[in-house]
Image 1 (spheres, rainbow, N blue to C red):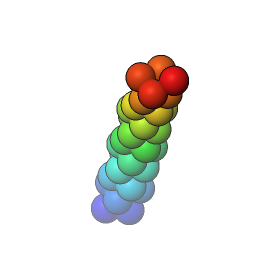
Image 2 (tube, one colour; image 1 turned 180 degrees about the vertical axis):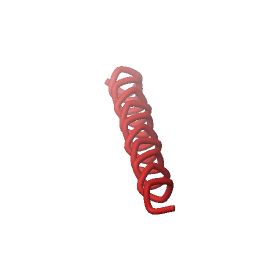
Image 3 (cartoon, rainbow, N blue to C red; image 1 turned 135 degrees about the vertical axis):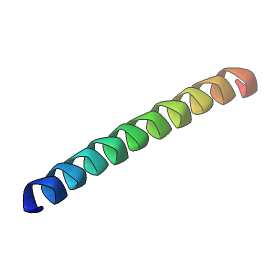
Length: 39
């Protein structure tokens, strides 16, 4: 039971970190495109 909980938490942390990385990448691309568009 404890092992399953730990594994679940670790998986959730990985998904959260991946989601944050994806959002950060998208925001970065949007900023670059906006910068080129308004430059």
